[in-house]
Length: 247
Length: 119
Length: 147
Image (cartoon, rainbow over all chains, first blue to last red; front, side, top):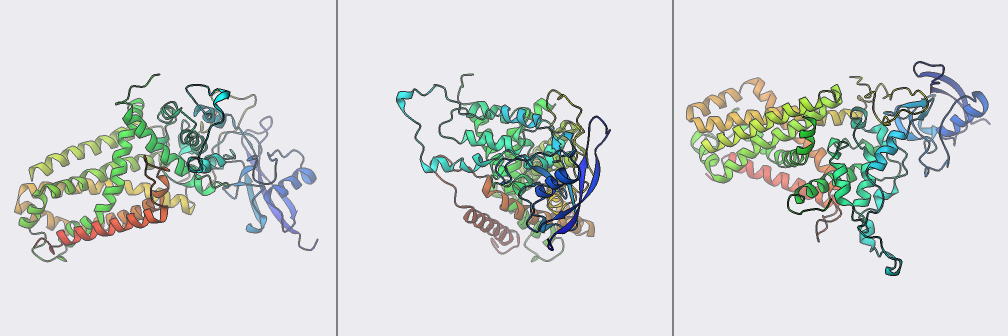
């Protein structure tokens, strides 16, 4: 137990029934050397203050539940080693989201933007079972595979300066996912999705800050997706003058 | 106004893209010579003397390059200044600010066409 | 420069069952190093606007005649103009470096039948083009050719 280090965690607290605005509360946590931020939060909840609310699940950076601001940077707390931090660690809910309670943010806005990009295979005709499966070459897969790795952790939304100022903006993960389907060889929904991309939530709100890609824990590179999507949307817009489309 | 800006977005983005790419490629050469080199007397005396400068600018390619140096940075500038205003001041006046900036870029580009043709 | 988040950022279209606190950003959201670089990048937009408008003077002077051109050269030699153009040069270099780093990953996986070159190759091509064009302009505008 000699390598246990006491750290102070300054955690945002907010109870809508009691608090007007969020405030912070400090906890002294004895941290083992291999602990992540999530371990400390769970220690706080188990041993010190059972009223602390925070989301987490898999503990291995695949579920996307445990996104929070650690010293102001959006991080997956299950993946953030305390070794990289000093005696005081600030844990706050993800930036740019309404706060339900403590470290739990409201995801409904994100889910709406998500649904808006129609993240499913859109095909004019249902493929008959007798036709067999779709065939896709490794190259066709490579065109979108990276963008399919998103775990919906929303760190990119917390990092994006445009998300913080433009409520209508679709945002990195949603656009990356829409682009993932646009690039899928099985999909025929590009006109519909590009119409969404040029609508209220316009992809052109993105000013290529690249923050989303900097914080993404899965190397999805949403900034690449968004800026590829811009070009696709422009090509779609240009060809719409030449090619009549059935609505 | 917001709806109009949304509809024009693809064109604006294309002009912005041209501005940042072509504009940035051309600017150092132009700035080092016309904007700094000649006024400070660093270039040979005949380099940008009026006759030679005029001859270069009157050449069709010269006209095009000069127009690119006038117009394209305006679109990059307008687009990024608009983004900066949103970052610094929020999106409340974005439609107004954006329209104003693009209007400046449009006016400047039009003036550039007229000026370049007058050479 | 502590711009807070828009109060409606990421808000759902219908309110949920409990009262939520408005979205927050950390106090240093806009002043962190990466964000500062990005804001500087956007701020070069102001410089570019001015550069384009000043370049109009160049065209007007060329159209007007030798006296106007001489007056322009004298005007450009003023310390404030020199400082502005030096700033514009720094801005163009800054924009170029950042843009050339970000541009390759915005390329689609393929354009028709063709695949874009690998990102480092594309970056090298961009820098080569930048050098070639700058050199070309220096040669022509610097008086080397045509003489």
